[in-house]
Amino acid sequence: MRNHPARLISRKRDGGALTGDEIADLVDGVVDGSLGDAQLGAFLMAVCCNGMAPEETAALTMAMRDSGRVLHHDHIHKPKIDKHSTGGVGDKVSLLLAPLVAAAGVAVPMVSGRGLGHTGGTIDKLASLQGYRTDLSLERFGEVLDRCGYAMLSPSAELAPADRRMYATRDISGTVESIPLITSSILAKKLAEGIDGLVMDVKVGRAAFMTEEHDAVALMEALVATGRLAGIEMSALLTDMDHPLGLAIGNALEVDEVLQALDGSCPDDLREVTLALGVEMLLLAKVANDADAARATLQRLWNDGVVRQVFRDNLELQGGDPRVLDDHSLLGRAPHVVPVEARHAGFVADVDPLALGQLVVDLGGGRRQPSDDVDPHVGVVLRKVMGDQVQTGEVLAFVHARTQAAAVAGAQRVALAMRIGEEKRRRGALIKRRLA
Image 1 (tube, rainbow, N blue to C red):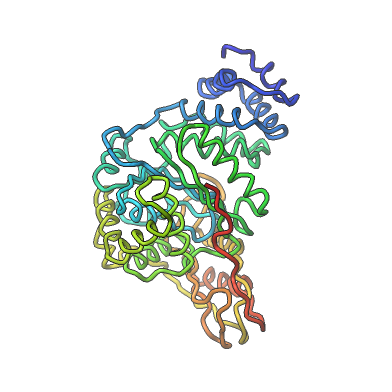
Image 2 (image 1 turned 135 degrees about the vertical axis):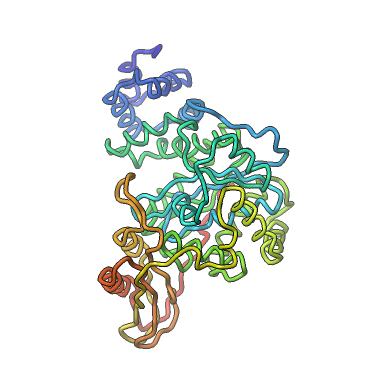
Protein backbone atom coordinates (compact mmCIF):
# COMPACT_ATOMS: atom_id res chain seq x y z
CA MET A 1 0.00 0.00 0.00
CA ARG A 2 1.14 3.55 -0.77
CA ASN A 3 -0.45 4.92 2.43
CA HIS A 4 0.07 3.69 5.96
CA PRO A 5 -3.22 1.83 6.65
CA ALA A 6 -3.36 2.84 10.33
CA ARG A 7 -3.52 6.52 9.37
CA LEU A 8 -6.43 5.95 7.00
CA ILE A 9 -8.26 3.74 9.49
CA SER A 10 -7.83 6.20 12.37
CA ARG A 11 -9.09 9.07 10.24
CA LYS A 12 -12.21 7.10 9.36
CA ARG A 13 -12.56 6.03 13.00
CA ASP A 14 -12.59 9.71 14.01
CA GLY A 15 -15.30 10.58 11.48
CA GLY A 16 -13.11 11.96 8.72
CA ALA A 17 -13.45 11.37 5.00
CA LEU A 18 -11.12 9.46 2.71
CA THR A 19 -10.22 10.46 -0.83
CA GLY A 20 -10.89 8.24 -3.81
CA ASP A 21 -7.17 7.47 -4.15
CA GLU A 22 -6.93 6.50 -0.48
CA ILE A 23 -9.96 4.19 -0.75
CA ALA A 24 -8.52 2.60 -3.90
CA ASP A 25 -5.26 2.03 -2.01
CA LEU A 26 -7.14 0.25 0.79
CA VAL A 27 -8.95 -1.96 -1.71
CA ASP A 28 -5.64 -2.80 -3.41
CA GLY A 29 -4.46 -3.91 0.03
CA VAL A 30 -7.52 -6.08 0.43
CA VAL A 31 -6.72 -7.91 -2.81
CA ASP A 32 -2.95 -8.29 -2.49
CA GLY A 33 -3.03 -9.04 1.24
CA SER A 34 -0.96 -6.05 2.35
CA LEU A 35 -3.97 -4.91 4.41
CA GLY A 36 -4.04 -7.39 7.29
CA ASP A 37 -7.16 -9.07 8.62
CA ALA A 38 -7.16 -6.97 11.79
CA GLN A 39 -6.73 -3.80 9.75
CA LEU A 40 -9.53 -4.73 7.37
CA GLY A 41 -11.84 -5.48 10.29
CA ALA A 42 -10.95 -2.14 11.89
CA PHE A 43 -11.63 -0.26 8.65
CA LEU A 44 -15.00 -1.96 8.20
CA MET A 45 -15.96 -1.19 11.79
CA ALA A 46 -14.97 2.46 11.33
CA VAL A 47 -17.22 2.66 8.27
CA CYS A 48 -20.03 0.86 10.08
CA CYS A 49 -19.87 3.30 13.01
CA ASN A 50 -19.32 6.55 11.09
CA GLY A 51 -20.81 5.91 7.66
CA MET A 52 -19.51 7.29 4.38
CA ALA A 53 -20.30 10.31 2.28
CA PRO A 54 -21.95 9.44 -1.06
CA GLU A 55 -18.70 10.21 -2.90
CA GLU A 56 -16.78 7.85 -0.59
CA THR A 57 -19.29 5.05 -1.12
CA ALA A 58 -19.05 5.54 -4.89
CA ALA A 59 -15.24 5.49 -4.71
CA LEU A 60 -15.31 2.29 -2.65
CA THR A 61 -17.76 0.72 -5.11
CA MET A 62 -15.67 1.56 -8.16
CA ALA A 63 -12.42 0.46 -6.52
CA MET A 64 -14.02 -2.88 -5.67
CA ARG A 65 -15.36 -3.14 -9.22
CA ASP A 66 -11.90 -2.44 -10.63
CA SER A 67 -10.25 -5.02 -8.37
CA GLY A 68 -10.92 -7.65 -11.06
CA ARG A 69 -12.15 -7.92 -14.61
CA VAL A 70 -14.78 -5.48 -15.81
CA LEU A 71 -16.92 -6.71 -18.71
CA HIS A 72 -18.11 -4.40 -21.48
CA HIS A 73 -19.96 -6.50 -24.11
CA ASP A 74 -19.13 -3.96 -26.83
CA HIS A 75 -20.21 -6.50 -29.45
CA ILE A 76 -23.81 -6.34 -28.18
CA HIS A 77 -25.57 -3.29 -29.58
CA LYS A 78 -28.46 -3.28 -27.14
CA PRO A 79 -28.97 -1.56 -23.82
CA LYS A 80 -27.68 -3.80 -21.04
CA ILE A 81 -29.87 -3.69 -17.94
CA ASP A 82 -29.87 -5.96 -14.89
CA LYS A 83 -32.00 -6.34 -11.76
CA HIS A 84 -30.96 -7.22 -8.24
CA SER A 85 -33.10 -8.28 -5.29
CA THR A 86 -32.03 -8.01 -1.66
CA GLY A 87 -33.61 -11.45 -1.13
CA GLY A 88 -36.70 -13.06 0.30
CA VAL A 89 -38.81 -16.19 0.56
CA GLY A 90 -40.27 -17.59 -2.67
CA ASP A 91 -38.53 -14.92 -4.77
CA LYS A 92 -38.08 -16.59 -8.13
CA VAL A 93 -38.59 -13.38 -10.10
CA SER A 94 -35.21 -13.41 -11.87
CA LEU A 95 -36.04 -16.66 -13.67
CA LEU A 96 -39.08 -15.01 -15.25
CA LEU A 97 -37.83 -11.47 -15.53
CA ALA A 98 -34.63 -12.12 -17.47
CA PRO A 99 -36.30 -13.85 -20.46
CA LEU A 100 -39.22 -11.41 -20.31
CA VAL A 101 -37.01 -8.33 -20.64
CA ALA A 102 -34.73 -10.05 -23.15
CA ALA A 103 -37.78 -10.75 -25.31
CA ALA A 104 -38.39 -7.00 -25.38
CA GLY A 105 -34.97 -6.32 -26.91
CA VAL A 106 -32.89 -5.59 -23.81
CA ALA A 107 -29.71 -7.54 -22.99
CA VAL A 108 -29.74 -8.89 -19.42
CA PRO A 109 -26.32 -9.98 -18.07
CA MET A 110 -27.22 -11.45 -14.68
CA VAL A 111 -24.67 -12.56 -12.10
CA SER A 112 -26.66 -14.05 -9.24
CA GLY A 113 -25.92 -15.59 -5.87
CA ARG A 114 -26.62 -18.73 -3.91
CA GLY A 115 -29.03 -18.78 -1.01
CA LEU A 116 -27.93 -18.41 2.59
CA GLY A 117 -30.24 -18.74 5.56
CA HIS A 118 -33.95 -18.44 4.91
CA THR A 119 -33.55 -16.50 1.65
CA GLY A 120 -33.32 -18.53 -1.53
CA GLY A 121 -30.75 -17.94 -4.27
CA THR A 122 -31.25 -17.83 -8.03
CA ILE A 123 -28.23 -20.05 -8.67
CA ASP A 124 -29.64 -22.77 -6.41
CA LYS A 125 -32.95 -22.66 -8.24
CA LEU A 126 -31.22 -22.98 -11.61
CA ALA A 127 -29.17 -25.91 -10.28
CA SER A 128 -32.40 -27.92 -10.03
CA LEU A 129 -32.60 -27.84 -13.85
CA GLN A 130 -30.68 -30.94 -14.93
CA GLY A 131 -27.50 -30.03 -16.81
CA TYR A 132 -27.97 -26.26 -16.54
CA ARG A 133 -24.59 -24.58 -16.04
CA THR A 134 -23.99 -21.24 -14.39
CA ASP A 135 -20.22 -21.75 -14.00
CA LEU A 136 -19.57 -20.28 -17.45
CA SER A 137 -16.34 -18.65 -18.50
CA LEU A 138 -16.73 -14.91 -18.86
CA GLU A 139 -16.27 -15.31 -22.59
CA ARG A 140 -19.07 -17.90 -22.81
CA PHE A 141 -21.23 -15.67 -20.62
CA GLY A 142 -20.92 -12.95 -23.26
CA GLU A 143 -21.68 -15.38 -26.08
CA VAL A 144 -24.89 -16.63 -24.43
CA LEU A 145 -25.93 -13.05 -23.73
CA ASP A 146 -25.45 -12.16 -27.39
CA ARG A 147 -27.29 -15.21 -28.73
CA CYS A 148 -30.45 -15.26 -26.62
CA GLY A 149 -30.58 -11.88 -24.88
CA TYR A 150 -29.77 -12.99 -21.33
CA ALA A 151 -27.25 -15.10 -19.48
CA MET A 152 -27.10 -16.39 -15.90
CA LEU A 153 -23.75 -16.62 -14.13
CA SER A 154 -22.76 -17.76 -10.65
CA PRO A 155 -20.31 -15.49 -8.78
CA SER A 156 -16.95 -15.46 -10.52
CA ALA A 157 -13.62 -15.01 -8.74
CA GLU A 158 -12.64 -12.78 -11.66
CA LEU A 159 -15.36 -10.20 -10.93
CA ALA A 160 -14.87 -7.81 -7.98
CA PRO A 161 -12.55 -10.17 -6.05
CA ALA A 162 -12.13 -7.59 -3.27
CA ASP A 163 -15.73 -8.18 -2.29
CA ARG A 164 -15.11 -11.83 -1.45
CA ARG A 165 -12.67 -11.03 1.34
CA MET A 166 -14.57 -7.96 2.51
CA TYR A 167 -17.88 -9.82 2.63
CA ALA A 168 -16.38 -12.67 4.65
CA THR A 169 -14.82 -10.21 7.09
CA ARG A 170 -18.08 -8.29 7.45
CA ASP A 171 -19.80 -11.54 8.35
CA ILE A 172 -17.49 -12.18 11.33
CA SER A 173 -16.90 -8.58 12.45
CA GLY A 174 -20.46 -7.41 13.13
CA THR A 175 -20.52 -4.98 10.20
CA VAL A 176 -23.03 -6.67 7.91
CA GLU A 177 -25.72 -4.01 8.44
CA SER A 178 -23.65 -1.02 7.27
CA ILE A 179 -25.47 0.63 4.35
CA PRO A 180 -22.29 1.90 2.60
CA LEU A 181 -20.78 -1.59 2.82
CA ILE A 182 -23.99 -3.27 1.61
CA THR A 183 -24.24 -0.76 -1.24
CA SER A 184 -20.65 -1.18 -2.42
CA SER A 185 -20.85 -4.98 -2.18
CA ILE A 186 -23.98 -5.17 -4.34
CA LEU A 187 -22.99 -2.57 -6.90
CA ALA A 188 -19.33 -3.56 -7.35
CA LYS A 189 -20.34 -6.97 -8.71
CA LYS A 190 -23.17 -5.54 -10.79
CA LEU A 191 -21.00 -2.82 -12.34
CA ALA A 192 -18.40 -5.45 -13.26
CA GLU A 193 -21.06 -7.26 -15.36
CA GLY A 194 -20.89 -4.54 -17.99
CA ILE A 195 -24.33 -2.95 -17.54
CA ASP A 196 -25.79 0.40 -18.55
CA GLY A 197 -28.48 0.35 -15.90
CA LEU A 198 -29.72 -1.51 -12.83
CA VAL A 199 -33.12 -1.89 -11.19
CA MET A 200 -33.06 -2.66 -7.49
CA ASP A 201 -35.78 -4.71 -5.81
CA VAL A 202 -35.35 -3.81 -2.15
CA LYS A 203 -37.42 -6.10 0.06
CA VAL A 204 -38.93 -5.00 3.36
CA GLY A 205 -40.81 -7.04 5.96
CA ARG A 206 -40.46 -9.98 8.33
CA ALA A 207 -38.46 -12.16 5.95
CA ALA A 208 -36.38 -9.36 4.38
CA PHE A 209 -32.83 -8.33 5.21
CA MET A 210 -34.30 -4.94 6.13
CA THR A 211 -37.32 -5.50 8.34
CA GLU A 212 -38.08 -1.79 8.91
CA GLU A 213 -39.23 0.48 6.11
CA HIS A 214 -37.02 3.43 7.08
CA ASP A 215 -33.91 1.21 6.85
CA ALA A 216 -35.00 -0.22 3.50
CA VAL A 217 -35.67 3.26 2.11
CA ALA A 218 -32.22 4.41 3.27
CA LEU A 219 -30.69 1.46 1.41
CA MET A 220 -32.73 2.26 -1.72
CA GLU A 221 -31.55 5.84 -1.68
CA ALA A 222 -27.92 4.85 -1.17
CA LEU A 223 -28.00 2.31 -3.99
CA VAL A 224 -29.59 4.69 -6.47
CA ALA A 225 -27.31 7.60 -5.58
CA THR A 226 -24.15 5.47 -5.68
CA GLY A 227 -25.06 3.79 -8.96
CA ARG A 228 -25.61 7.15 -10.59
CA LEU A 229 -22.30 8.49 -9.29
CA ALA A 230 -20.70 5.38 -10.80
CA GLY A 231 -22.18 6.27 -14.18
CA ILE A 232 -25.13 3.94 -14.71
CA GLU A 233 -28.89 4.47 -14.88
CA MET A 234 -30.71 3.43 -11.70
CA SER A 235 -34.19 2.93 -10.31
CA ALA A 236 -35.53 1.01 -7.33
CA LEU A 237 -38.74 -0.49 -6.04
CA LEU A 238 -39.53 -1.21 -2.41
CA THR A 239 -41.49 -4.47 -2.37
CA ASP A 240 -43.29 -6.49 0.29
CA MET A 241 -41.61 -9.41 2.04
CA ASP A 242 -44.10 -9.73 4.89
CA HIS A 243 -45.51 -12.71 2.97
CA PRO A 244 -43.98 -15.28 0.62
CA LEU A 245 -43.82 -14.36 -3.06
CA GLY A 246 -45.79 -16.82 -5.14
CA LEU A 247 -46.94 -20.19 -3.83
CA ALA A 248 -43.79 -22.35 -4.00
CA ILE A 249 -40.87 -22.21 -1.55
CA GLY A 250 -37.96 -24.51 -2.35
CA ASN A 251 -35.68 -24.68 -5.37
CA ALA A 252 -37.21 -27.23 -7.78
CA LEU A 253 -40.70 -26.33 -6.58
CA GLU A 254 -40.07 -22.69 -7.46
CA VAL A 255 -38.69 -23.63 -10.88
CA ASP A 256 -41.87 -25.65 -11.47
CA GLU A 257 -43.88 -22.54 -10.62
CA VAL A 258 -41.81 -20.54 -13.12
CA LEU A 259 -42.41 -23.12 -15.85
CA GLN A 260 -46.14 -22.95 -15.16
CA ALA A 261 -45.97 -19.17 -15.27
CA LEU A 262 -44.32 -19.30 -18.69
CA ASP A 263 -47.40 -21.22 -19.84
CA GLY A 264 -49.68 -18.53 -18.39
CA SER A 265 -50.54 -19.92 -14.94
CA CYS A 266 -48.86 -17.44 -12.62
CA PRO A 267 -49.76 -16.35 -9.07
CA ASP A 268 -51.02 -12.78 -9.05
CA ASP A 269 -48.33 -11.43 -6.73
CA LEU A 270 -45.48 -13.00 -8.70
CA ARG A 271 -46.88 -11.60 -11.94
CA GLU A 272 -47.31 -8.12 -10.45
CA VAL A 273 -43.77 -7.86 -9.08
CA THR A 274 -42.22 -9.33 -12.25
CA LEU A 275 -44.07 -6.91 -14.50
CA ALA A 276 -43.32 -3.92 -12.26
CA LEU A 277 -39.59 -4.65 -12.34
CA GLY A 278 -39.74 -5.35 -16.08
CA VAL A 279 -41.35 -1.97 -16.68
CA GLU A 280 -38.52 -0.29 -14.77
CA MET A 281 -35.91 -2.15 -16.86
CA LEU A 282 -37.54 -1.16 -20.14
CA LEU A 283 -37.74 2.46 -19.02
CA LEU A 284 -34.05 2.50 -18.09
CA ALA A 285 -33.24 0.93 -21.46
CA LYS A 286 -35.36 3.61 -23.19
CA VAL A 287 -37.13 1.03 -25.33
CA ALA A 288 -40.54 2.20 -24.09
CA ASN A 289 -41.90 5.74 -23.90
CA ASP A 290 -43.81 5.29 -20.65
CA ALA A 291 -44.81 2.73 -18.05
CA ASP A 292 -48.11 1.85 -19.72
CA ALA A 293 -46.43 1.12 -23.05
CA ALA A 294 -43.73 -0.94 -21.34
CA ARG A 295 -46.29 -3.00 -19.43
CA ALA A 296 -48.37 -3.60 -22.57
CA THR A 297 -45.27 -4.83 -24.43
CA LEU A 298 -44.29 -7.20 -21.64
CA GLN A 299 -47.79 -8.62 -21.24
CA ARG A 300 -48.06 -9.24 -24.99
CA LEU A 301 -44.71 -11.05 -25.14
CA TRP A 302 -45.66 -13.16 -22.13
CA ASN A 303 -49.13 -14.04 -23.42
CA ASP A 304 -47.88 -14.82 -26.95
CA GLY A 305 -45.33 -17.40 -25.76
CA VAL A 306 -42.30 -15.38 -26.84
CA VAL A 307 -40.88 -15.36 -23.31
CA ARG A 308 -41.20 -19.13 -23.12
CA GLN A 309 -39.18 -19.46 -26.32
CA VAL A 310 -36.44 -17.15 -25.04
CA PHE A 311 -36.31 -19.22 -21.83
CA ARG A 312 -35.95 -22.37 -23.97
CA ASP A 313 -33.13 -20.80 -26.01
CA ASN A 314 -31.22 -19.90 -22.86
CA LEU A 315 -31.87 -23.33 -21.35
CA GLU A 316 -30.28 -25.02 -24.35
CA LEU A 317 -27.32 -22.62 -24.51
CA GLN A 318 -26.50 -23.15 -20.83
CA GLY A 319 -26.75 -26.94 -21.00
CA GLY A 320 -30.24 -27.58 -19.65
CA ASP A 321 -32.76 -30.10 -20.95
CA PRO A 322 -35.51 -28.23 -22.84
CA ARG A 323 -37.88 -31.19 -22.43
CA VAL A 324 -38.55 -29.95 -18.90
CA LEU A 325 -40.72 -27.18 -20.36
CA ASP A 326 -43.24 -29.80 -21.45
CA ASP A 327 -42.58 -32.42 -18.79
CA HIS A 328 -42.15 -30.83 -15.36
CA SER A 329 -41.68 -34.25 -13.76
CA LEU A 330 -38.09 -34.12 -15.07
CA LEU A 331 -37.40 -31.72 -12.20
CA GLY A 332 -37.81 -34.63 -9.81
CA ARG A 333 -39.84 -34.85 -6.62
CA ALA A 334 -39.26 -35.33 -2.91
CA PRO A 335 -40.09 -38.87 -1.69
CA HIS A 336 -42.70 -37.72 0.82
CA VAL A 337 -45.45 -35.13 0.33
CA VAL A 338 -47.81 -34.40 3.23
CA PRO A 339 -50.85 -32.11 3.17
CA VAL A 340 -51.37 -29.40 5.79
CA GLU A 341 -55.04 -29.29 6.76
CA ALA A 342 -56.95 -26.42 8.35
CA ARG A 343 -57.73 -27.16 11.99
CA HIS A 344 -60.89 -25.06 11.91
CA ALA A 345 -62.94 -22.96 9.53
CA GLY A 346 -62.32 -19.28 8.92
CA PHE A 347 -60.02 -17.09 6.86
CA VAL A 348 -56.27 -17.30 6.40
CA ALA A 349 -55.19 -14.39 8.59
CA ASP A 350 -51.42 -14.70 8.11
CA VAL A 351 -48.75 -16.56 6.18
CA ASP A 352 -45.45 -16.08 7.99
CA PRO A 353 -42.65 -16.07 5.37
CA LEU A 354 -39.82 -16.21 7.90
CA ALA A 355 -41.25 -19.31 9.57
CA LEU A 356 -41.72 -21.01 6.19
CA GLY A 357 -38.27 -20.02 4.95
CA GLN A 358 -36.67 -21.39 8.10
CA LEU A 359 -38.63 -24.62 7.72
CA VAL A 360 -37.30 -25.12 4.18
CA VAL A 361 -33.75 -24.67 5.50
CA ASP A 362 -34.43 -27.28 8.19
CA LEU A 363 -35.80 -29.66 5.55
CA GLY A 364 -32.45 -29.35 3.72
CA GLY A 365 -33.52 -26.88 1.07
CA GLY A 366 -31.28 -24.02 2.22
CA ARG A 367 -27.93 -23.29 3.85
CA ARG A 368 -26.85 -22.33 7.33
CA GLN A 369 -23.21 -22.20 6.17
CA PRO A 370 -21.94 -21.38 2.65
CA SER A 371 -20.50 -24.91 2.30
CA ASP A 372 -23.79 -26.71 3.05
CA ASP A 373 -25.34 -28.93 0.37
CA VAL A 374 -28.90 -28.16 -0.74
CA ASP A 375 -31.69 -30.66 -1.48
CA PRO A 376 -33.47 -29.17 -4.52
CA HIS A 377 -36.72 -31.11 -4.05
CA VAL A 378 -37.82 -30.24 -0.53
CA GLY A 379 -40.03 -27.30 0.39
CA VAL A 380 -43.56 -26.03 0.76
CA VAL A 381 -46.26 -25.32 -1.81
CA LEU A 382 -49.15 -23.15 -0.64
CA ARG A 383 -52.71 -23.85 -1.67
CA LYS A 384 -54.20 -20.96 0.27
CA VAL A 385 -52.98 -17.40 0.80
CA MET A 386 -53.87 -14.57 3.11
CA GLY A 387 -57.57 -13.67 2.94
CA ASP A 388 -58.72 -17.02 1.53
CA GLN A 389 -61.70 -18.69 3.21
CA VAL A 390 -61.14 -22.25 4.39
CA GLN A 391 -63.20 -25.07 5.87
CA THR A 392 -62.09 -27.50 8.57
CA GLY A 393 -59.88 -30.14 6.99
CA GLU A 394 -59.28 -28.18 3.79
CA VAL A 395 -55.71 -28.31 2.47
CA LEU A 396 -53.68 -25.17 3.20
CA ALA A 397 -50.36 -26.37 1.76
CA PHE A 398 -48.19 -29.37 0.97
CA VAL A 399 -44.84 -30.14 2.57
CA HIS A 400 -42.25 -31.92 0.39
CA ALA A 401 -39.59 -33.71 2.43
CA ARG A 402 -36.90 -36.38 2.32
CA THR A 403 -38.51 -38.49 5.08
CA GLN A 404 -42.06 -39.04 6.28
CA ALA A 405 -41.15 -37.87 9.78
CA ALA A 406 -39.72 -34.61 8.43
CA ALA A 407 -42.82 -34.07 6.29
CA VAL A 408 -45.20 -34.60 9.24
CA ALA A 409 -43.18 -32.37 11.54
CA GLY A 410 -42.99 -29.76 8.79
CA ALA A 411 -46.76 -29.86 8.29
CA GLN A 412 -47.22 -28.99 11.95
CA ARG A 413 -44.95 -25.98 11.58
CA VAL A 414 -46.75 -24.81 8.44
CA ALA A 415 -50.07 -24.99 10.28
CA LEU A 416 -48.67 -22.66 12.94
CA ALA A 417 -47.32 -20.28 10.27
CA MET A 418 -50.73 -20.09 8.54
CA ARG A 419 -52.98 -18.69 11.23
CA ILE A 420 -56.75 -19.00 10.69
CA GLY A 421 -58.95 -16.17 11.97
CA GLU A 422 -62.60 -15.16 11.94
CA GLU A 423 -62.21 -11.97 9.92
CA LYS A 424 -61.04 -11.64 6.35
CA ARG A 425 -57.79 -9.69 6.10
CA ARG A 426 -56.22 -8.42 2.91
CA ARG A 427 -52.55 -8.33 2.06
CA GLY A 428 -51.00 -4.86 1.87
CA ALA A 429 -49.50 -3.28 -1.23
CA LEU A 430 -46.86 -5.33 -3.03
CA ILE A 431 -45.08 -2.28 -4.45
CA LYS A 432 -44.61 0.11 -1.57
CA ARG A 433 -42.39 2.79 -3.07
CA ARG A 434 -40.59 3.71 -6.28
CA LEU A 435 -37.38 5.68 -6.59
CA ALA A 436 -36.29 6.79 -10.05
